[in-house]
Each structure stands twice: as structure tokens, then as C-alpha cells.
View 1 (cartoon, rainbow, N blue to C red):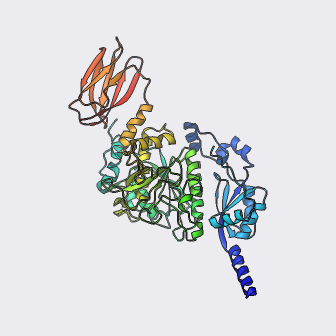
View 2 (tube, helix red, strand yellow):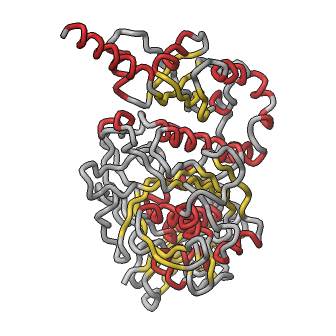
View 3 (cartoon, rainbow, N blue to C red):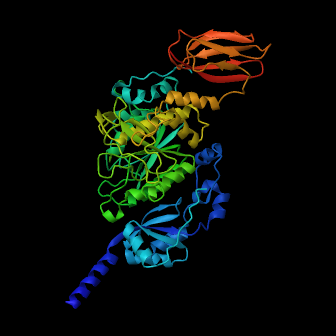
Length: 539
């Protein structure tokens, strides 16, 4: 009996260490740092460098590619297969037996091997093996009127149609879509506007390691249609004139952590191409191998590989817009990976009346941060299928791109904003900003209000004009210094001139009781100064 038990023990032990595992191997340094810092165009496009310059972001070590020498040495190890790589995290996603992968720690340039199977990492720690860690250095002129058709609610809920009416439709901004496939995008009529204007800039298929991204699955097609789709009186996306890169990072045939590595690899490629916004309607929590899955305590933005990558993307000046997930009615209802990341916009789903959709994943993160950050339509959203038919579908998969497109249109109106400023203006415009909750976060954003707020930081040199009260109901009092004379012009939110007058008195009263409630813009100019601001009219 003892002999049989001993044989069984060794059989179990051998099976555990011989089966195929996924892991990340982290490196100690970037030995080519000096060369790449002196030759930045060898690692980043000019557009990516320009984005950093605009936002005062310096080049860092994590911009530098992984040492090709390190990659070659790992690839030459018998029994180890390289699946993906991340320069930001200075790591390779590798696959092999526990023994072969753990042996990589003997290489001088390797600081850690972190297994996707969390229990194996615990086993290593419990066996008192040295676990080295890597410190990651994260050092109004109306010209467009669309017939939205069935998409009216999802666009107008965010007041994105008001941006479009001012010709802010995403022009000049680039969105990377990270998804499972884009079948039909190159043939369906609903995307021909993008091709006619050369707005599909390229992409990559990471699971297959080729440039055929019009393949694999339809989910990315549906997602893209809510941003860039166009069928008159049926569907108009929230950013019909933005440019797009299409990246396949999801393998729908299985759930494996390598998809997180593909995700980070795509984000890095997006950064190098100068992308402004990343939309990802993907999420990770439960894997086919339950040992790889994330429990709630691990959903803090610091554990998930893709979550850490998303945070670094923000540090490069990119706004990441991520689906909260559809687990709200499950036993683990919280947002997953990478939706738990810091400094990203995680988007939950609401109905057409802006009520919380019960399937939408909730917050907070395990470190008690507000999640989701904001919300958009996710119930019966209008989308295009792979044949160009306009239909409806539900899920936070559509809440996220609807909002991402609105951000592209908003950012195209004030392109000098940093990623941090964009995120903050979006949050501040949301209807629950003062009282966020775990279901809709800060609520549904109002991009008209966000634009008005952002325009204030674009203001001309301040004059000494003061206006009160603001918000105003009937009479607006304007005060300017004695002997000052200037022109005062008031516009509605569509850019239509409401009134124009010359101010040349110590105090002036404007009667605004006949104006509809809403937000109005004003310009005041004298011979040597100008001021722009907003007035909120209340009933």
C-alpha cells in the first residue's frame, strides 16, 4: 500500500510539473536604452512623438523595445514557446512545462517568472524559492446634420449630436479597436464611408500573427459600427470621421491569459503608431483553467497583466475606454481585467431611459475605487452586422465604443487637451459626478457640457469683465471698469448668434428671460484683450 501511494504521489507531482503552463518572464533591464533614446524614430512614429510633445510626456525606459538578445535566448530554450511580448512591462508571455519555465529564473537577465496559474506562484513562495520582482517605471459653426435613425438615442443621450452639429466628428483623432475580429468591415456598405475617406489605417491579427484582420469573428465589426458606421437614417456612429486601427487580440476558441498579452502588445503597437484612444470591449476574469482566473481581491488594477498595460497606455497620453463587463447578475459581479485599471474610463451599460442595466458589471474595485467610471447605452444599441444590416444588440461591449467615439469627437474640438484632462472633463460632465455609485459610476456624460467646460481652458487672455448671477434666470449684470469699451456677443450651443452689443458703461443689464434654458457661449473683446466663457440659463 505504501508503495502504491508513493507511486501515485510521484505520478501526480510529475503530471503537475510536466503539463503545459502559461507564464510571463520579466527582464532586468533594457541594454539598448542609450541607442534608442538617441534615435527615438527607431521605436516610435513621428505622430507618437508629437503626441508626447503636446502633452509634455517624456520618453521613458518602457518605450524601448525588449532586447532582441533576450528574446533570442529565451526562444532557444528547449520546451519554451514565446507567445507574445510587452516592451512596456519588459516581459515575454511564454508557454511550457512548469520545470522548463521555472528554470528561466537561472538566466542572469531574468528577474521573475510569474505563472498565470496563481497557485504555482504561491507554491514557489511557500517553498521559499527566491522570487525576484521587477520595478515597473511608469515614469460654433453649424455644418453637419446627421439622420441617426435607430442610433438617435445612443448618440443624443451623450449630447454627441451637438458636437457633430458643430463639425466635431472625430477628424484628426485616431482610435485603436482591440477586439476578436472584424469580418465584413472591408465589404459591408455600413463601413464604406471609412474606406472612401481612407480612415481605416491598418491593423494586425495577433493570434494568427498576420495582417489579415478582416477575419476570425464579428464582435469587433459590431463594436466598430457604433463609432465609425454610417448608413443614412439608420446608423451614424459617434465618431464617423475619426481614423481607426483594427487589432485582433481575442481568441474566441478558448479563454487563456495569452489574450491579455496580445492585448498589451496591441496597445504598445497603437502607442507607437500615434493612436489617441483605445477602445476595448473585452474583459477577463474566468479562464478555462480555473487556476488562471482572477478573484475579487486581485481586481485592483495592479495584478492583471492587461490592467497594468492599460495604465501604462494612459501614461503615454492615450485615453483607454474599456467595457465594464456583463457579469452584473452573476456570483462575481465586479468589473474584471483590464476594466479595473487606474486612469482609464470603464464604461457600464444603461437603458434608453438611463437606468442601470442589470447585466452590467459593478464596482468598486477591491481597492475601493469607483467603477465603472461612466455609463452609456448598452441595451438594444443600434449596430451593423457583417453584411451591413442594421440591427440591435445589448452589452457593455457597445456602451464602451459609443462613449469612445464621443470622446474622439470631443477631443477633436479641443485637440490640445491631455489624456488626463479629457478623462476629467468627461467625468465632471456626467450626471452623477457629485454622487457616484457602484452601478453607473459618475453617470452618463454630457459632451456638450464637457466641451463648454473645456473651452474655458482655451480662453483668451482675461479681461476685467464680471458677470452675475451665473446661472441666470432673468437679468444678467455685466460689470467692467470705468471708461472700458468692448463688444459682447452671445451664441447658442449651435453657434447661432443670439445678440451682439457694445458695452461702454460701468454696469450693464441684459434681459435674458426669453431665452430657453441651456448653455450659451459669449465672447467679449476690447482693443487689447479678449475673453470667452459660458452662461447657464435656468428657468
